[in-house]
Length: 166
Image 1: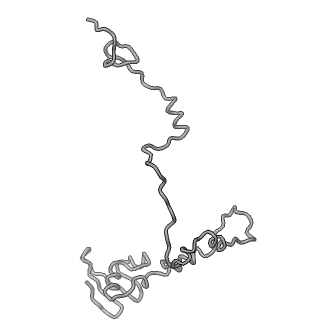
Image 2 (image 1 turned 45 degrees about the vertical axis):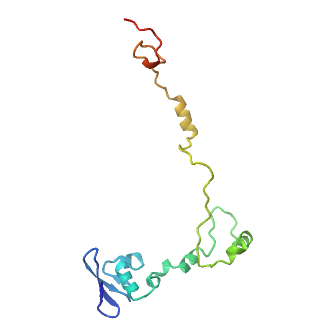
Image 3 (image 1 turned 90 degrees about the vertical axis):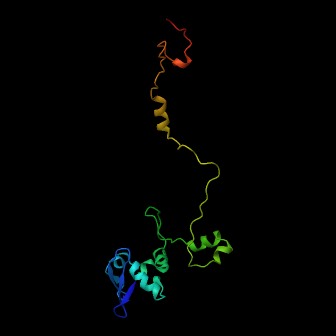
């Protein structure tokens, strides 16, 4: 629930915290300070924007836009040990050769996830041990089984074949 103090300043009552918050739509601020901290509208500012029929993305910082993301990765990133920097690589040519005609007709504003495929077969129940772990397991001494009936080694009371003595 909110009330308009002026054209740009609103007072929002939160049912979750039972507190009142002051939201300035022009300065993109809220008294909860989440809008200033995150760079995008908090729940109080979002309630006002949605109630007025506005677009919440217009109230977010430019950093969170798709254009800013594209500008970040606009230039190629080279590894420092890659070698010769005098010849820039042409990534556009390689992309045209590898892509199909369907993917070039897609909307450039859509970012799709990478192609990942699960390997065939049943998943392993145990992890694959390293060579050093396997060697360590072979070198560990195993406990020798001792019979409680005849006091012999190598078998148990259940499989003992010695005759009973009185």
